[in-house]
Length: 292
Image 1 (cartoon, rainbow, N blue to C red):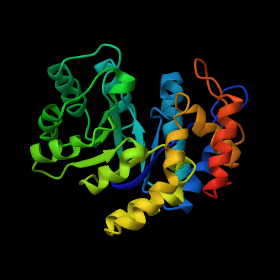
Image 2: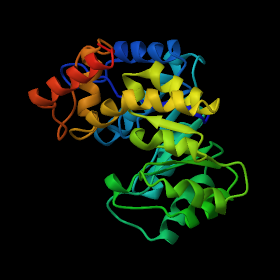
Image 3: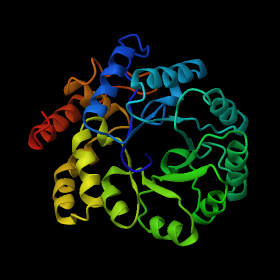
């Protein structure tokens, strides 16, 4: 289940900013229809930073319920306080999720030893599979390949979402680890090259609005049909980039609304809707690649 196109799912909200479970059901069914490998719920793209602890747990539990065993669910459970991450992880142990995506601690900027101790402590307090999540542009904290290798020796730390965009990380990590440990790209723009270099797939923002295309991209690479994969990725590249024209998930939420996957693009402050100019740019790209 930890391969191919995994979607970093948006969290649909109503006009008052409450989680919209009707739209959540619609999104889950959309990904099941297009054979997305798995769903990451309550991650960065899911606006986990603006959810209360109770909302976070409810969102995960409801996603598992609505998925009803038809698609694996991975929950974002990271925090910058180790005890908080442990508590959130333990609260979901019997929820039906297949694993946890745990982001590097943000703001406090720990050392590499601090990072090791953080993830070590989380892993030793649960049996749930743990996926490391490295996104220095957001957290101000970079978990280095050597630290990843140390952590890979822990039984239930099973992989990493590497969102640096640094393609040299694939070989560095694979060289240091001799066990079954999966590598997922966290950057749609470089995901094709990441997978071609030995990565197992992508945890994708683009998949929110182009689920079929991202599934096909991963399948083509898996079948070593590189020319076809590159042609498809070239078609998607403008979409990969425009979805980050403003802080994520503003653009992808508006795009999902435009494609009638959700009712509205409500977010919680400090996140705000995208500008009219960027809406027009996205619409034109959707028309060009025949998604709209």
